[in-house]
Image 1 (cartoon, rainbow, N blue to C red):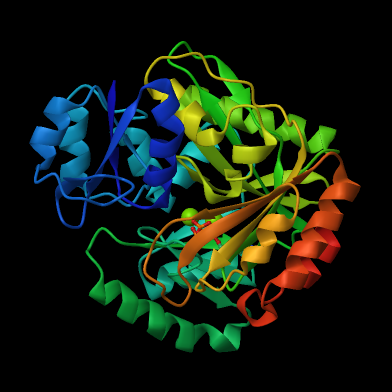
Image 2: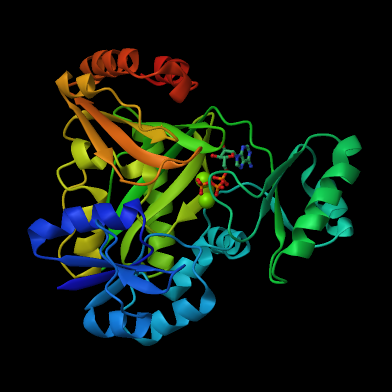
Length: 378
Ligand code: ATP
Ligand code: MG
Ligand code: MG
């Protein structure tokens, strides 16, 4: 079977690697160059979207910020999973918030802002501080503002007004209550064509400058896991979703509030390549090709370290047991996700030892905040 992935980044690459043993061929459609490429070599097949769609059995996506016309063509092919609606909702915070409310899943109070009056209304309705997020195209914390005090309002509005003036006219800002969370967690799960659902253990996540830096699979979070599974079931059933879906949460005193969803495989699920029997990439492919979803339970205590903006990883890390490096073979750029390192151990103590050994080998300046985050999380 042949699967076409919208987007030609590392997620398509890792789907391709996971699909090969199953006899699934993955190709990637680069939405910027409008051509079909090999997900590992990026070799160009000189095919446009119509040709790519004709020759594949299933089309899916590795990201949610996909132009409407492309979504429509894919939907019309009858081969698109999880489908245009799920991708559109995941890429538009206004639709995402409506979905969360309609599905009865707790999330941060919000107000859609298009004008200065809307922003004043948001302050009246929600109070300060506020987090202001662009409805479209935000990722890695980009397109966000914080409004802490009423005094900052003119300055922040000026920036937002300029941002809105430059954007396409369907753009808005979603103002959200600032949530004083204890920690951030996420859940990854898969829903099959038959509606069967399997959910991985929750992952605790640490972000550095808005970008995911460290993820640790949680082994002792039964009450939270129950809430996460409930949210996953409500949202994926509501969407009649097929594939892997990620949900980011704030943990506020043991209560989970959804931050956002991602209708795809997710960076905070990379640890499943090592810590679960069937990883998120294989499970996404299994779901969209109609195979049964594989076991999502934890087989080892696992963590993942993102390699961001550097290719300086000493080869000695390979001597540490339970450590596996995954490069994306991308050109080095500041703030860019270049790869990740999975670390596993038979229990949390062994995992911690191995992560500590790893951190001693990594250049501190390339991994700011990581020592502290790992001390807190492990
Ligand atoms: P991603 O790369 O995960 O898609 P994004 O750009 O869509 O990121 P969010 O996940 O919405 O952005 O926010 C980025 C980070 O900002 C969150 O992980 C969290 O640390 C912080 N944050 C977002 N919303 C809030 C909020 N309402 N209250 C407190 N902190 C928040
Ligand atoms: Mg996001
Ligand atoms: Mg996020």
